[in-house]
Amino acid sequence: QVQLLESGGGLVQAGDSLRLSCVASGGTFSTIGMGWFRQAPGKEREFLATFDWNGRTTYYADSVNGRFAISRDNVQNMLSLQMNSLKPEDTAVYYCAGKSDRIATHFEYEYAYWGRGTQVTVSS
Image (cartoon, rainbow, N blue to C red; front, side, top):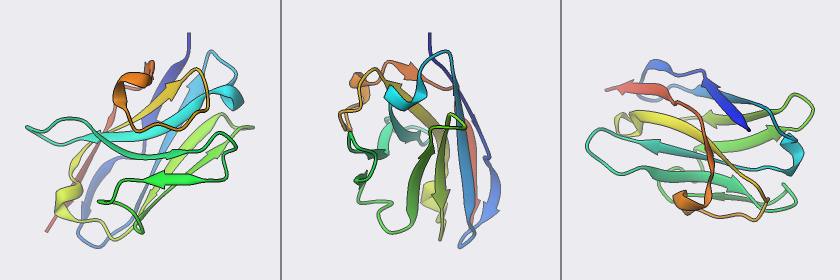
């Protein structure tokens, strides 16, 4: 069973940067499709970023495109999300998610593995 653990959240000011990490265990990380999601208070969980099957092409939600960057390290079994130019509306619990194949998707239901999330709060 794949287990995911996020870290790196915190309280920052608008315009700051933050880097989230997600460590995977219990599976062959290089074969797992990975993505980032977030859920703000009172809102549904939102897709943020993922990779194509080869790991070279990335996909982003419009709300974070150009500000956030997803990356993975298959040696360290780690997924990262670099977040720049943070805004108060980026305040949410951030989740990493995994799926048993590397076909890119933004659909939440296609991800079988989820971390517990890490809180990001951006003050104005």
